[in-house]
Picture 1 (spheres, helix red, strand yellow):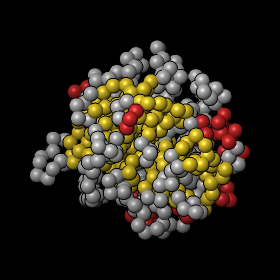
Picture 2 (tube, helix red, strand yellow):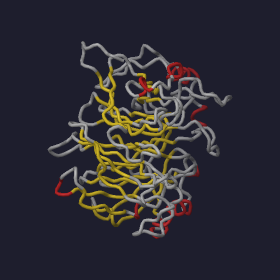
Picture 3 (cartoon, one colour):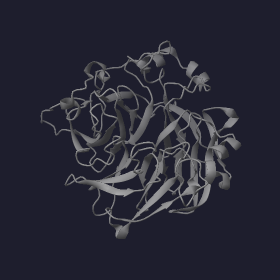
Picture 4 (cartoon, one colour):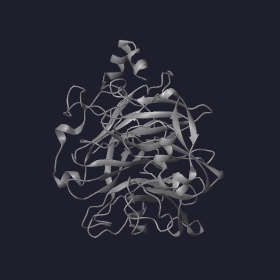
Amino acid sequence: MKKSILALPLCAVVTTLVYADAVLVDGPMKFKPIAASAYQQTTSDPLVLNTKPWVIPEGYAQRIISDESDLDIYPNSGDWTDMNTVNETGKRAGRYMYRTHEVRPGTDPFLGGAISIVDLKTGEAEVLAQRADWEALDGLVWTPWQTLLFAEETITAQLPDPDVPAAQSGLLYELKFANNDPTKVEEIKVRPKLGSLSHEGIEIDDEGNVYVIDEDRKGAIYKFVPDTYGDLSSGQLHALRVKNGAKTGEAEWVALDMNQVQINARIAAQAVNATPFCRPEDLERIGDTLFAALTCEDATDPANISGPGAILAVSLTAVPKVSYFVQPGVNIPFEVKPTSTTPGETGLKSPDNLAKGPDGKLWIVEDNENSDIWVALPDENGDGYSDGVHLFASLKDKGAEGTGIYFGKDPHTLFVNIQHSETGNDKTMVITRKKQGKKSED
């Protein structure tokens, strides 16, 4: 990829890096990009941060749907609200939102990870499930067979699962609802064959294969192929390996030792020379492409484990092809200039969460000060890169992080969480496109 970057015509590079305020990003979430990250609008004023913490485009409004005044699971340690999803199918589609809550051993008292449910009609929030041995719950996805998958984001497990005591890292779990009631849990089962890893992103393709990551600075990307559709109790875990020791280009899914996978899948991936990426975090599938947020990737230096980050694209074809879809210095500016260590430019740094927009665009949230939300257009010209990456929102809450970005039934409404707020009040918000003719309040 380094060679292909250098081979790009200079004029093409300059064109992709020009930030044009006049650009109008079309679609259900049509918007004119905001002018810059919220550096000049940073505040610690709770009146602002608990009402309108985001800088958003003209024609949009924001509001809180749930915060720690509704549900405070960890009153002594803060409530880390991470990934989320909603009930997308069935009679009550769009009625409920589910959230994992990331808390780690060492907090006092440690009550264990939790999943909460928010009734989007009434605003009521409550704990759906919680367990004392769950560490740093993060990834969460709704399966086509109507269960929830969620997972632990921990590299070294401190509290072993009693059913998988040999697992050295985090585990993935499957929650089944009682009598198709999306508010009641029938059972939760651990799924160790999807790997003992530092989990976050989880995705599923049309064939029922499940994709996961290892959030390590030399982490791999994995594919689990079940023996039977919808049954995650048996199957084969694979790791992505790009050919010829490269980071991009043609690749393959390599089968792993299934005994080792359930103890430490990282070791199993290293044994087959799986391709290491710098802190893969979230995953998002759009059509036959799997996108991965690589928080510290340096696309120009494979050995660097403190890079600005990038978005990887993996084609889910017979022969997978891997490319950098969003890369600082190519189709988005650097937030921190390569010759500096100080943020200040409006650009990409530490991409974390991903979401599929209602019209197939890729939405990206940074884990960074100030956390930005970017929208990446599809690659229409076939060069492997997004044809344009535009700034939708930026967080005035400097130390906080946007996370858990998600679109539900309404194509004009975006859900996003805020964690580590300066106010101590983490929250789940909606950002909604106003009806034409209605004046924006933001």
